[in-house]
Length: 168
Image (cartoon, rainbow, N blue to C red):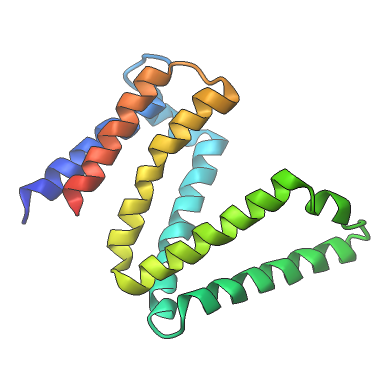
């Protein structure tokens, strides 16, 4: 058993605790696990873990960029079908405006790059490295959404990132 992995896990846990402890109470991060947003995040994390394994399995058998294309084609068709069933007008004019188009392109690029990474490395390594994005999320929270206490959150994010690096 490698000690770095243990230190990495502790670092990531301390970082997550610091990110969630916005009230200063010792038990606040644990109490927040019962909040609806936290429960949804846990559900998303479980789904992410399951799909990470599936993505690794699929991208070692078919080209990852083709897989990304198929995933987005199915999502587009499924969402369009939901809109049609609900008799809602598809906002085509809004879809081609600059920001939404850029966001869609960046999301497709991110997915494609992620699938290529899954085809080249184990799911556990790729999934762990993806968690470094918490640093960017904290910065975006401060810059774009005027969130407070960014230094504490950045410290927590750095602990998580350091923990991730130690587990590699």
